[in-house]
Image 1 (tube, rainbow, N blue to C red):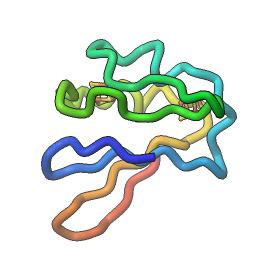
Image 2 (image 1 turned 120 degrees about the vertical axis):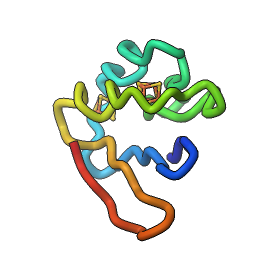
Image 3 (image 1 turned 90 degrees about the vertical axis):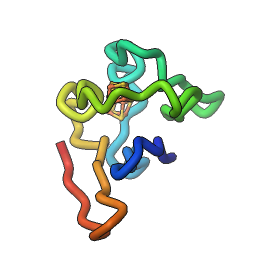
Image 4 (image 1 turned 180 degrees about the horizontal axis):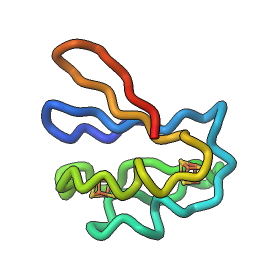
Length: 76
Ligand code: SF4
Ligand code: SF4
């Protein structure tokens, strides 16, 4: 699952994600919602302010930031 945030893309690594909902709970812009399968997804990616709360709050390092220019991926 991917959030397009301009020059960055937020990715939810489903191998690490335990579906706790913390990222969607802390997102101040309500960008992230929980799907029927329990995994987060970008409901309103256009609202993302790149505050990185989802990245820093995830306890399982499942939110990754991918630089679209270099393809470099950072985990929280
Ligand atoms: S905070 Fe991390 S582990 Fe929890 S639902 Fe979000 S991505 Fe998954
Ligand atoms: S970076 Fe901030 S606004 Fe964007 S999805 Fe994560 S918590 Fe929400």
